[in-house]
Amino acid sequence: MIDRAIADHLLWISTLEQAIEKRTALMAVNDAESDIHCALCRWLYSADFPERLRTSPFFVDVCDLHAVFHTKAAGVLAAIINSNENDRNSIPELIRTYLKTSYELVALLENWKDAIASDFYPEV
Image (cartoon, rainbow, N blue to C red; front, side):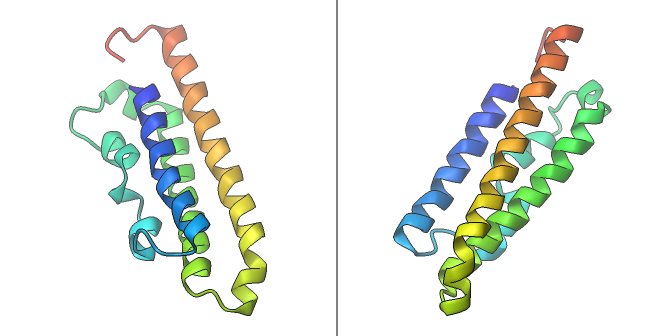
């Protein structure tokens, strides 16, 4: 499950990276900012999500960091779309912080996966 969530997150990032490379919007800024539009969030809040994982401390941390990630991703996209002189100068730093947050999110998901494995949740 978590491997799929990570893969979905990385796929979402590839769409944003295409927008960065092409300097164009491949998604609306509001959609990028809202974490409810991506597969990771849909999985976290789905009816099928195991309740014992929802009560894990990792759940809150992942949800919080995921929301931060989307805010940073939207900032990158907005800067690209609104590409004026000030925004162009800020884009490299915006990209760095968005990527750092993404790496932190994937690491947190990996840690959660390891914690699940050590507690042995057979259906996860």
